[in-house]
Image: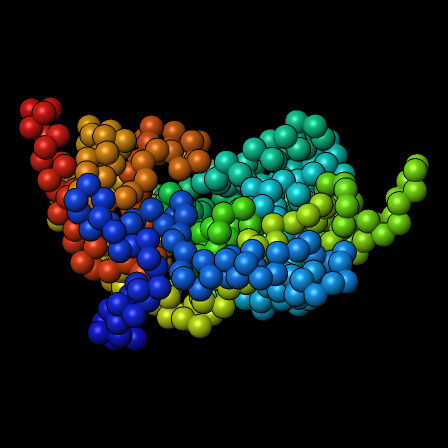
Length: 420
């Protein structure tokens, strides 16, 4: 894809996102907080409205027309998600509220019932709190032991250290695919292969990869994978768990209630097959349907095209940030073509607090994130209380990066005068 084509990609798609065409504090909005949540195209907004305007009804339980239409759309979205990540069976996709719930589902339905004292769980020091806290709770209640893969000098996943940690006592490896702070892309295929050689299960947190690159769960051979819809152009309140079908069938239910049952008696019940065994109660119907619309939208663009374009943006972002004084970016440097890391930069600027920096940039209409990004242990490890973070998506442009860097330069100069 040429630079002209790449620029055309964003130019072609930006009209699909009404929220981007507004002013904030008298300046055109520059939205660079995509790692926290993405914006929603008109097609997704219309899918939400269409359901509530024409098909609003509960799924599965009704035989009337509205219920049938709602059920078809709801289950059709599951087929779309399954195809999007190349699941072998549609039943391997479980709807959840978000990736956090998906990880908790595995932690409680598998971890609490499978792990025993002395079993080992391997995580990494870069994990999001959502992939840390559930396993802390599991370890506290089962006696399992947590181990953590450290970083290399370039602040990436240390594969050699991982090899030294894993043993036949390891029962689970749960790691992030792309770090939301370091931007590193972890070697998940090799991580899975090594784990399986020791008989361990593997969960992949793919929140920062599913929206940005093609994912093939069969090629990866992970046992579970989680993602959140709101980071991939879908609404909030919907995410999914992928799990190998036979493994999901072995796991007990996570929540009890309607829909997840086969037969109910006063003193016991039998349960539905997957995926419904893990989808108790009335689900987020509209949100699931809109997730399917988001998958259609991303598929029509092409995940390879998105990834290639974001690599170009990444290269340009890092080139421009390199012109500023006293900016420390965490994680590995990208290759010359922008490959080798995600399209985000978590950084500090000397003595300027990231929250102050974000506030100043907001006055220029530029939205970035500031804080610990739900990776407090990682921030302590790299010696930063918090960082500022600019994160890109396919609708961002070089012009927006220029506006961000220009405002950042002014902010650094402003605080420099204050601290002088």
